[in-house]
View 1 (cartoon, rainbow, N blue to C red):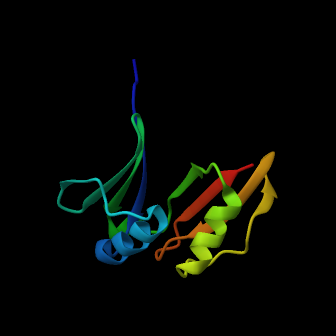
View 2 (spheres, rainbow, N blue to C red):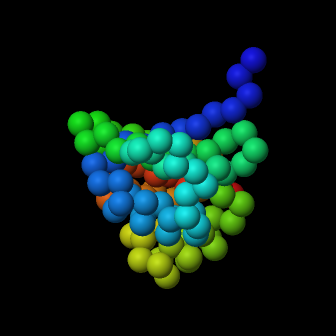
View 3 (cartoon, rainbow, N blue to C red):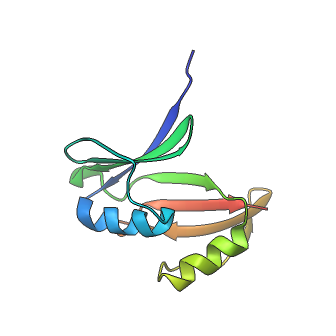
Length: 110
């Protein structure tokens, strides 16, 4: 039985991506399992891996659930992560982001 899921984004510059995702999650990576890989553990059974794989960089997408989308949008604006603000989408509200390689990061919430 599957008991854990890790989404992944591929990037061309791991240091640059680490800085961006550290701002996004408001904390450093939780693990560095091997060279070229960073992990943020977002719950007991979920997380995000950021891989250094230049040939596939910018082709990933991930959806993150947020308990307070408006507060998240305000915090991201304050720290310089660009977005167009919460928009309707998928039966909820979404905040569309792009990491430095153009990977789509969609934050969703009520």
